[in-house]
Structure formats: C-alpha cells, structure tokens
Image (cartoon, rainbow, N blue to C red; front, side):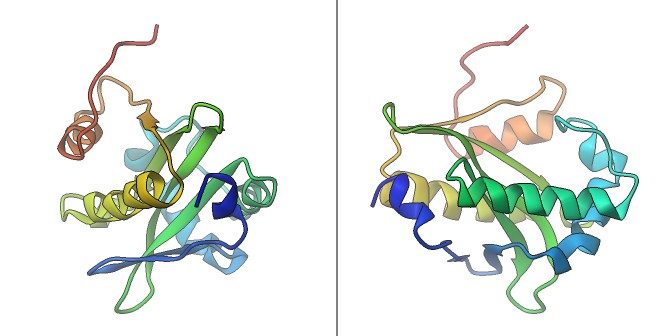
Length: 163
C-alpha cells in the first residue's frame, strides 16, 4: 500500500477500546461539543467553535480533503457505545518524501486515560506499515506539555522551535 492507495477506500481502524472511523454530518453535535470547549482548543490552530454550523463545515472539509486526497481524518469513538470523543488524522502529505503531518483533539472528559495514545498508535501503525510513510511530523505549541509528552511516548523527537 502507499499514500495514494489509502484514499481508495476509507480505512477503519479498531483498537482494544476504540474505533477510528469516517465521520458523518450526524457527528456534528459531538464535534461541536469537543471543539466548543476552550480547554480543548486553547492550543488548536483554529478558533473555538461557537455555532453548530462550524462543526458541520469542519466535517465536510475533512470529507472533501479525503476525496481530494489531501487529508484523512478519523472520528475517535468507543467500541462499546460508538460515542465520538475526538478525532485524529493525517494532512500535509508529501508523496515524494513519503511524509505527512498529524493532528488530533480529544474531549476533555476523555483526557488522561490513554485514549489518544491508543488512537495514535493505530494511526501511526497504518502510516508506517500500510501507507509506506518514512516520516510523520507533528507541530505542537511549546506550552502544550500534555501533547508533547504524548508524542515523546510515541517515539517522536523534538527537532526545533518554529518562530
């Protein structure tokens, strides 16, 4: 498989507790609850959501990004009840260099339970094994110590500071 082949059919991923799946417009309420929480978005690269239409627009943008082979974004949900608690995905693909960047967010109620570690392990495994990526990058604000610790736990290394 390669970067291009992952866009042939949206890959669903399963872990012990989670399902990483394609998001639908029906997930707008869950995405709005997550991205309207300032504690979740304080290190995000976009404004905190104030209207449900922003969640619908975001899901549609992620879907268009997948269709146009620019990104892939999974909704993170529990296997048990399907409750959406966050999202994660790849963007910024560089096929020639076999690299991509990752982004993610998680509902505050799901913090510090190892959920994002579990989700990103599945996503990164797909990236290296199935998509044939050579490099996976993440940009994190220096103040976001929880995210930095998560990435270090997953084997990422700090390579510098963008100014």
